[in-house]
Structure formats: structure tokens, C-alpha cells
Image 1: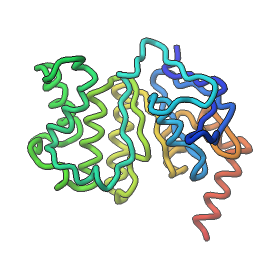
Image 2 (image 1 turned 90 degrees about the horizontal axis):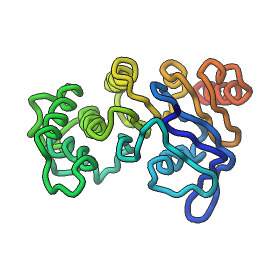
Image 3 (image 1 turned 45 degrees about the vertical axis):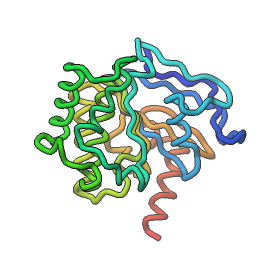
Length: 238
């Protein structure tokens, strides 16, 4: 049974619809990359899946026992967030808030979960360091550890390597691959890098002037995929 099912979905904000008739589903274990032109509604779609925006039409449903609280989210960072004056431990622990209910404190299990995710992201021994003093790549790993405290099922990642150098970018993609392939966590990732999407994703959702949803190999053969790929390559050559 699918984790996420979108039926005839319409997206928009401020009363304006930017996309209509969107249909796709995300099954357990999928690695879905969302691609498309700038301004096509990729981040709006992700916020709608998270319940942060209401659909303009159609529906989004969750299944296979997934609840909204079991979705981990790594948003694009703002300059204010990058300067946040908290420790690594404090930020990662905050990912457990959905588990606390009305408790005003974190219990032993939640603290242990945060410690495991800090170690998983290669940050053990740095727990008391201030977030604002970290490199961009380290900050993203902190936020990924935080997102993992919310889920062992589904991660939503909004351009998680934006602004990172090539070496750190590859490290981040490797971590995401391991979460998907070794731990079975389903990934939905917005990416502006179509080459990465075609190399790593199991499925592609292309939104914009045209829409495609399906396996990666079918996207490459589709009219939507061929046109977008030719435009991207033309832009790189220019």
C-alpha cells in the first residue's frame, strides 16, 4: 500500500492555482526525485504533502500506517536559520517533539534516538558545538539527523545540497542513498540537478508546463524527459 497518494491534485498559494490534475503515488522504499522548471510548484507540493498548505483541489492521502508525525522534513535553509544559536544536540533532539505529546521534556528513549542519529551523521563528539559555527555541510547533516528523529519511514528533502561544494554534495547524496537502500527509508527529494536525479532516483515526478510521473528509465524515454534534458544540456553548453 502506498505511503502517499495524490489524486487530481491542484496546487497554489495566495488564491492562485499554479498546477492542476496532478496524480502520483509513493510506495515504501521508493526514491522519488521531483524535478521541473523554476517556479513550477515543487516546494509548494512538498509543503502541501506536509500539511503546511491546503490543496487548491483534489486530495493527498497517507496509507500503510503512515501518519503526518512520521514524516521527516529537511527544508531549504534561510540565512536566519544558519545563524541559529543552539547546540547540535539541542537541534537534533527537537526532531523528537512530535513524539513527546504533552510532555514538556525528552525521555531516555528520545535522547538515545537523537544520539544514534548524531552518530549516524558522523557528528559524534561534536554534540555541544554551536550550530552557527558549523560548515554548511555539517549544518545539513545536523538537520538530516533532526529529520530522522521524526521518522523511520519517509523523508522529504527540499534541495538538500543547495550551496554545498562538490565533495560535500557527494557525501550528502551518499548518506541519503544509504538511508534509502540500507535502512529502507522512503525518500522524496526536490532536485535542480537532473543528472543526479537520473543516477539516484527510482522514480521521477516532473512538474511544470508538462507533467510526468513514473520510473526513472521511462522518464528518459518520454517526450517530457527528452525535452527537459535537451534544454538542460543546452543551458550548460551556453
